[in-house]
Length: 76
Image 1 (spheres, one colour):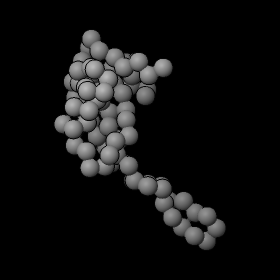
Image 2 (spheres, rainbow, N blue to C red; image 1 turned 90 degrees about the vertical axis):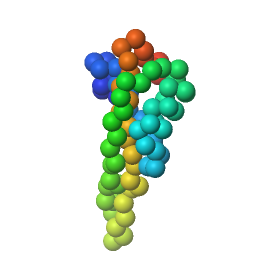
Image 3 (cartoon, helix red, strand yellow; image 1 turned 30 degrees about the vertical axis):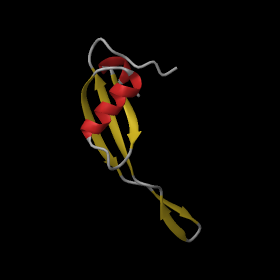
Image 4 (cartoon, rainbow, N blue to C red; image 1 turned 90 degrees about the horizontal axis):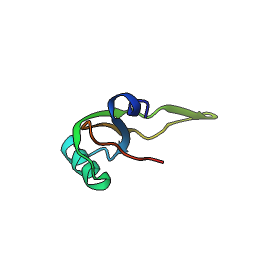
């Protein structure tokens, strides 16, 4: 969330199958704001070991949502 103070941007973990339009519509509906743009990134899971067994944490999708200047989301 380090973008929030400077650019009006908020990051979310979203469904891996969601596209930018779906993310934009969901954020606008849930938080009653207007979205300027959405950036997405697919994050690969990290490799973890437990003794001899090697596994990995799940992969996930990150969305950074930039709001129009007059809007903000109250998180706390």
